[in-house]
Image (cartoon, rainbow, N blue to C red; front, side, top):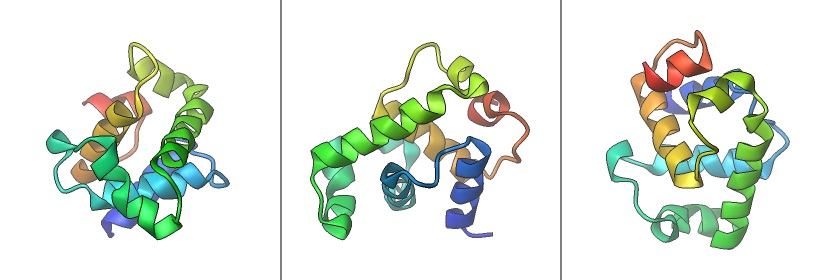
Length: 113
């Protein structure tokens, strides 16, 4: 199973809406990050996505916030964070879990165990 497949399975498990463009941006960002602990600033992080989709960092950030907002109603995801995460926090946690290839049991287990 490729990293892309693992990420897409995770997105489906977390109910990330397939129709949102932010989902594609998030996938590209996750696949481009080498180390979850050293996630660069959004300017650097969004450069490849910006070029690939011919968009702006502001549009990327807004799209990621929309993905977070739409998935925030997922009860397990909402309780996994003390408060609504920033895009960077969300990306770091997702990258760590996708890299770990942890089987999906519950979102809380998946994010923090």
